[in-house]
Length: 141
Image (cartoon, rainbow, N blue to C red):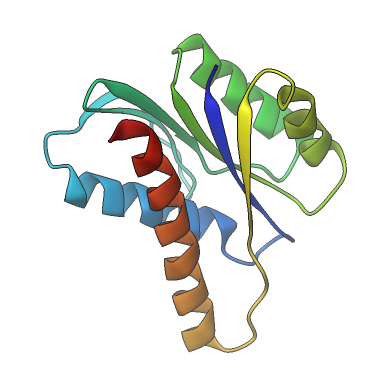
């Protein structure tokens, strides 16, 4: 049973940026972490599996459409990740995909709110990244 950490919010508010920041914080804090999978994309989005202390952490930052989320989750589940980090919109099909997984997985929802000020936006992304990291660490420590 994987733990699924979901960053939920409207489009273009920094969900992916927060997830990427959490990955960077994780790698900085755990320099012995190893990549099992790293999909190169031409955007800021990531799809990776990182092993920390024997725990597989799958991270998929795309969650804007049902198809993208399903494809990413399928890959991460195939890799038997212990922790999965992903994103969804505020409602609709992407949220329903995760809600269906709540029957067999522990799901942690983190709400990402929009910010109008660039400084507030960066700080909000950092706070969300810290929450993601804290949830990951509750499993790997």
